[in-house]
Structure formats: C-alpha cells, structure tokens
Length: 191
Picture: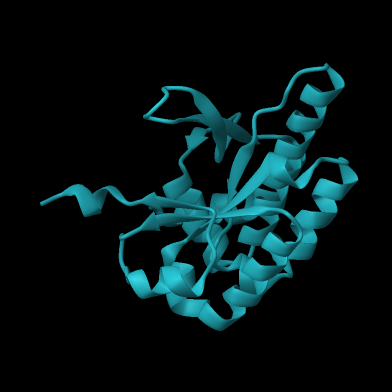
C-alpha cells in the first residue's frame, strides 16, 4: 500500500463513517447439510466517491495501526442493528448477523459495553447478533479474552471463533473457551 493511500485513509476515515462511505455488506452463511440460509456475516466496505473501492486489506491494517479500528467495528455493529431493527419494524423475521471483532477491540475499548449499548439502543434480542473473534486474539490476549467471552455469553450473545487453524491452532484452547461456533480456516484442508 502506498503512503498516499495510508494518509488518505487516516485523513478521511471519520468523514467516511459520517457520510456512510463505509458500508456493511452481508455475506450469506449457508449450512452445507441443509443448503439453508442460516445467517449473514457483516463485512465492512469503503467506497469513496473520488477514488472508488478501498479494500479491507488496505484500510483495516491502517485503522489498527492508528488505534481507530474499534470505531469501525462500532459503526458496523450500529449499521447491522439498524438493518435488523428495520426488518423487525417491517414485520419480517430477521436473519441473524455475525460481526467480526478486531483483536484490538479488546484493548482499545470495553467492546462488550460498546456492543451491548448499541444493541440495547435498537432494542434487539441478543440472539440476532453473533460476534466473531479470530484465533490470534487468544494467543495475544488469552486472560483478557476469557473474561470478555464470559460477559458476552452470560448476556445471551453467541461467540464464534473465526479462522481456527490459521496460525496458533491448539485443540486445548477449545477446552478453555466456550465458543458457540468454530469456523475452520481453509489451510486445515490443504494436505
């Protein structure tokens, strides 16, 4: 990534959130056994009116480096809640959505309180939103994460582990944490 793009991201990030240039895209999650839609995964996309698409692999590392990633994640949670609330208001049965949490969310803010407050503001049941954390968080922040995972689960949220097997895999980790779903990294299937 060129320095100019990094500077652009830093300079324009808050404006992009305010003007909804950073949007949530919804990737369907299909159960292979039934071929039924069971949920969506929320994915952040930045579409700038001047330069076009800024890809997540370009803006997320910059936001992590600058300590701004928690603001992005809160924005995505808010957008997901607004969509779910709209579904409920229209009499539709909402389909649950999973939201990725950055490893830095656990140190930059009280991510449980941030997420729980947003969801409460929209008056949504806790089983409408799932939270995904990557395996790398466990390696870096194991003790901190244990308490936060317990808080989420005690409040009725599902916690999923994303990318299990991508780097720090240990089946022992699965004994220490209570995850509701485990998403395996494709690297585990390469022989």
